[in-house]
Image (tube, rainbow, N blue to C red; front, side):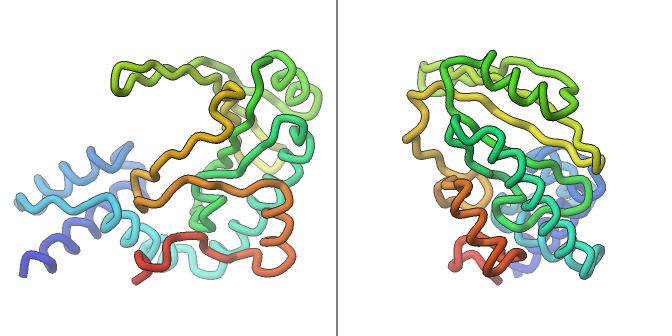
Length: 205
């Protein structure tokens, strides 16, 4: 009974995220609980699974086409930035991108200006800014470059110091490590199975 209630709330939270009524998972789950007068709190994993299902229902075959296009666009950007060891992460890496999703790429360099100038020569930069994250007494600092492609798709390139190249970070949604895709790995995916979903098998339902 409780499992059914959790799924029901997760489904409602997924809809709130899909329609961008809520900006993040925590907010969506809280609103779903209030709207349904429930106190059972689903996990991020339960919500992201329902969100993936709902996006498939709403977008059908066009979602597959979208994921292929975004992966192809990602490859072109990453090849321009190949000297900075780019990795494709986020929904485009996972193959779970949906309408309105952006492309997320991480690069590694101690020279933000070099990254910025290469992007500026190729693309329309919307903005750039630093972000700060403090955890366990340590503050991390990254630079974000936001790009608008001719297709209308948006890209976020995060520049991290070289010291982060071998970092291992857990995904807050699926619980596995965020490995991403290198240029060669992305090429292989596009050649062999361009719509493949890269999510933990034990989480697939």
